[in-house]
Length: 387
Image (tube, rainbow, N blue to C red):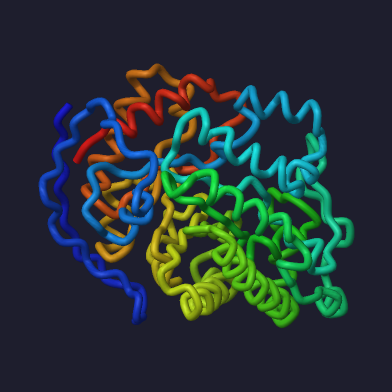
């Protein structure tokens, strides 16, 4: 299959910033040819994903999928029968490694992400929680006052979550640089949303009440999370993570002006702090439903913005500019379609993303019930594409 991609734009930046996105110049013609993946040596000098993010010449876009390790896989379902507690599965080194490697053994993605949860650090910050089957996260003592926030303690990853570092170290050895090992953390506003709401929420009334009636209390909590998550990223990188994704899933519940107050400064703090110690560590930012905030996400200073499926990839490229790499953004529902349909959607996204600085992914995590053979087909098609 041949495909041509070309576009140009001159979107004005939102605000002055040393990392302000530049307008995207006209893209060179891109030809995508579906062919068998050539055999390669068992060890590569540098993972394809890292080369793509850094703007180096690559023959195809790297590919991995959010939630690629999880409930749609039969192997994971079998493991869950033996270990029904999510926290056991995500806090036991051997189980974390086994689950993280399940999609690697099945599909050989270009990114192998640590099996964990964004709430994992909470216990180490004196915020008791659990993840209950059929209900999701439960915060036992939601935070609503200044006194509550004062009880939140400093997060020391090596003391509180040593299993994370151990698992990442093992994964690096197992993967042997054939793919990038990915870590991840939750963003301050998203973590704050969980601990203020007491768990998941539909309308986010509690955290918005706190934000708009007692902003100083929320800012104090956000600062604690920002400091802790910066340390957590550094810890993950020191123990084997070659890139880290920041999930700000609920930031898009904020209006643009409120995002600029309650999310953007703390994301900037994390990025600036991490870049001081790990300047070459790629940082990826994902926020579901982020179409109205793309330019503001770029101002955080991250290396990659992950687009959800509600944004056309070509338009996202124009709005973000040429300096930023992009990730995404096939609709996870596409994986319920026919193989031909899946193939067409993959090629459409790759064509619109253009050559280079693109990580092929979904626009959200794999949906429970997705046919495993369709995920296999996704990877087969993606890894066969050539620029």
